[in-house]
Amino acid sequence: MIPYKLREFLARFTLSRFMEKPRKNRVVEITAPKSIAVFVSPSDAANPATIRESAAVLLKHFGGVDLNFYTYTPKIKKDVVYSERYLQVLDPEDVNWYLKPLNMKPAHADILLDFTRKPHIPLRFFTLFSKSRLRAGVTSPWNEGLLDIQFDVTEKFELTYVCGQFIHYFELLKDRK
Image 1 (cartoon, rainbow, N blue to C red):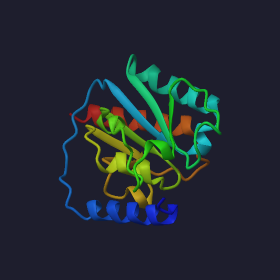
Image 2 (cartoon, rainbow, N blue to C red):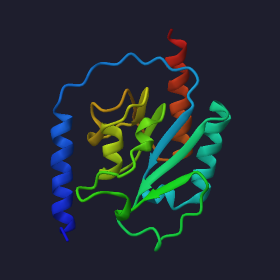
Image 3 (cartoon, helix red, strand yellow):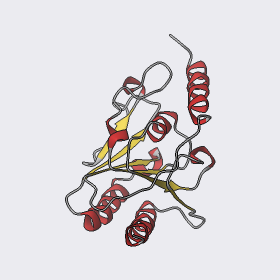
Image 4 (tube, one colour):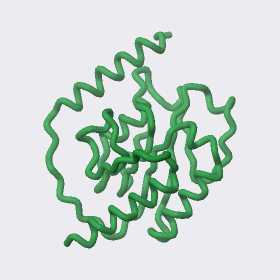
């Protein structure tokens, strides 16, 4: 068994190597997304009311979109109870030996939202290898250069507020045509 610290070091090294490659500037044209993947911190995921309210905000604006929230916990999810409909929890059984997720489905969503407060390595793999048409999230040093839209949340961080901010910026981007 490979020690977790070594796995984490190798994952950070792998991510840094891919982030060094030049990225193309993308022109984003998206009007009606079919799927949205939202990455949240485990502390936000532990509160089912927050997930429900944030899902309601996004579903009210985007209608019948396929919406999923994702989080990562270093503990096996059998120990932690997450009972929310939209929430999918990744745990050590869902990642390979250098912490890359085995299922990369969230990276293929039309819109990828990264609302994590700390750099969770498996979620960073999704953001880095994303085929999404729009990647947005809060400003953070670990997402620098990976997101198409970044917005700064200096006040108290609330997930529903951040979802509302994204909708506001999304509408500005859509009306820009």
